[in-house]
Length: 558
Image (cartoon, rainbow, N blue to C red):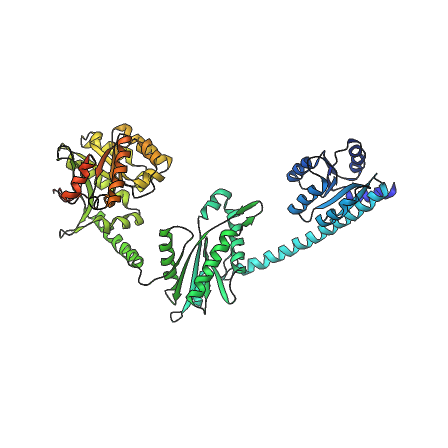
């Protein structure tokens, strides 16, 4: 009895899971366990035992071998796979010696033989209690060690060259390492859709995963190559020496590893893809890599792009930046001017409607087309300002005219949420029947719009405004959404119209779009009709309206 009391001093704080299908054995052993342990949870078969184990953390698991649903060896293996350090003891009958080798292979921590003898049980429990105590001592040691590491890490974080989250070199260190005269190679890596992790699991988990990604990249870095974190989900590798083909080959290999290697944070396990850019040079190294990365993004995710100084993309980006100040000036000096392009009723060949198109008209009368400033407006967030001006000036122009007219609406307009009130106020101010106004949205807006934006379009329809899908056929069409919006018009993109007289595929595509539009009760408008031959094909397809230079160019009428 005295030895049991001594043992209880070692085991009294332990929690135990005991799995046994035999009621008599279960009752006998449970009585002993209840004297020795702080908490004993009992399960009656292997499957129930596994379910209990997944719910709670236990110091020791005792399990019989022969049980229904899942035997003790199978259960022990599952437990050890989940937690190799879990203490597991098998309770075995003397005639079950064939289970000995499988149990050793699984890595169980002890055996208690049936019929159970108190001395044998005491020996096993004493051994396990000593092991658990030793583990606690080691755990306390590692806790102290972790505290010391945290202290040292906090000191390191004060260093300007180290990223505080990952421990990698940062942008400051990179700038110090790259000189104008260098010919280094930079691999810039951006994790695709990483924001989804922060949204789904929170920023704390996101930071842990970023830390693990940094470790993964460091482990997979070639010798003598520095690894950096430039911010958020952007990482970089810097070669002081090397060749572009060598780095491109590494990029492909790394991209494949990232896609197949799960990054974990506790129970969270996620996989990623990465978009990669490569540039070679000195002072402009990072700028060129970012240009290549941006160009790769236009093609999609999980891409690799090497900077090409002859690429038109860089000049295109410069052109956008050049037009942003011009756009600010145009807005401030009231130079946004609507031009009106006639839309012909193919039955009567009379003008029935106009599309209102934005132009910048300078003081010297120079006209700048949207192709040169719309992208700048989109990048700078000025599209809604242009739309407001176009609505105001177009309503003013058509208030005393009999024609219907269309105005282009962008996704930023819908996102800003001002359209319903602004259009209602404008219609009332200029005495315009909403039914005369056609709101043109790009196909992508109908396909990818949020529920809120779709509701706005439906509300505008209920007020009386008509709705057209512009450039139909150029993006991923969502026919269900187009039908749901109950659009009044579908405009076939000029890509499929301008060669309709000579290209059979263009003709077939236009025919399919026309048939779809008519099936949902929408009228069809053909854009880019530039010749008699094209117009005759439009008539042949029984398309309702024509818009194009064949009938005239857009004019300001001012």
